[in-house]
Length: 171
Image (cartoon, rainbow, N blue to C red):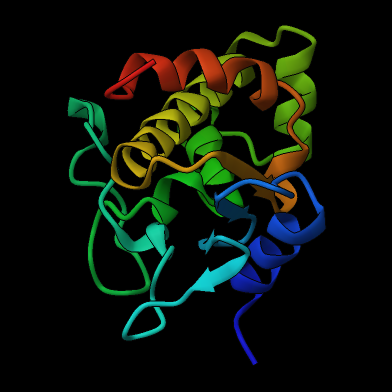
């Protein structure tokens, strides 16, 4: 038995988007933020079964208005999960607009050029790019595969590569 992120990354590395790649990093972004690493078709678990669990690391290169960040259920502040989960996106939008909307509503509004939704989603994309660039700088995976409810935001797939390149150590 292994956790969902490890099952996901193993599946993607075996016959999914990362099939044939030497190293695959799998991201699950939904209610929480988790991850897994597959190397040569096998899950990298680590000594304490924590390999790939990037959600409880601090947000890389935090901006002045992002510091110290929300308190995470793990007891620390500023964890990636407190910025990149679905509840975090909803909370950020509510903070910016005083409106309660779902992730789907925010993404739909941003897609039709709603300024507040676009700004909120832009901040989310930038935070995700910084976080993934940090993973790239550390692991240098061949493929990163996104899953979870937030992976359904279509703009991510066109915006992230450009943003990640601005933060990564290499292009």
